[in-house]
Image (tube, rainbow, N blue to C red; front, top):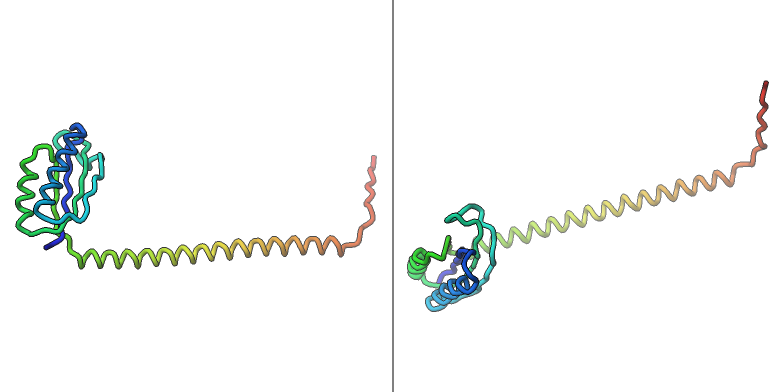
Length: 159
């Protein structure tokens, strides 16, 4: 048994009962001929481009394990049903998925380390700014304490 993913777009202008009927039809077809791993309704979404003079569609994703000969029959039934605007069936390559997940994990680890490094640098710069301000304030108060009061300056005005 190989792993497959089926995604199909149903016309969103149809009533909700009709959309559910189409989704149930293909879910049952897959269930009868293969093992469903997961079925997800993505809901109504905007299409990337116009299909049959429509811009919205109802997306459904079904992940399943099944025989290779079932795929041809599934695609044939999907083509016949006029309520299905677009569909795609792909074979899932476990090695490529594992490799992609490995590299995604590595990327997340690098980004977390980078964020931690930036946070540490930001905290160090803020601490340095606070220390500099405190040193300046201390120096200013010490200078004020050490200065002797000077005599008041009298100004003379000439006429």
